[in-house]
Image 1 (cartoon, rainbow, N blue to C red):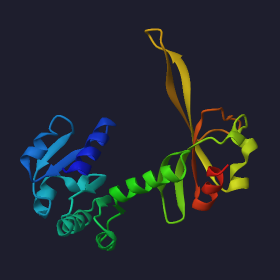
Image 2: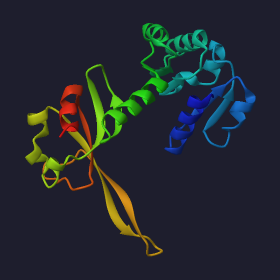
Image 3: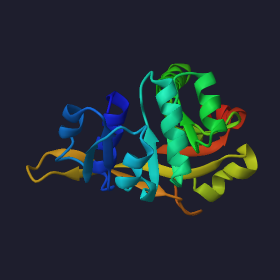
Length: 220
């Protein structure tokens, strides 16, 4: 339950997931007793302890053990042998990540690297609000709708035909008046917009595609 594990546990619990936290440190676990569904004090390198705790029945297990490379490898191996459907593991470096993949980790993540990449992308293109790397060739970006797109429908833009990218969401601020009578905004997110939906000034769009195709839109 280090920084990453603690934050992901809190985030998942806040979104209504049934979360189980595991740590050998009773003080770390106690902190989550009122936040998550179950908080367990046990040694995750002990197969019997994991079995008795019912860990084999979880849908997803997230392994975050800081710099303890050997331990994270052992825990990942045990989780896969117990039949956990999806095991996500935080890796320290590329060599660690390769070993995790070879022993069956379903997904290897590098949180610090991913945050650094997103920050770098935001400097390269100030239009980008968020960036997710999907593969060596494809990514998802959240970007301010270019001026050329404003007032046009999704059908008119023909993004797949012209740019080979898919528009998967539109984020828009809707002006409202609060109970106190002051002006404010609500954020509306249109997932999988229809062909007749029109882009308005101030819209933020989420696009999926190859890096080079997304860059063409960034430079509009």
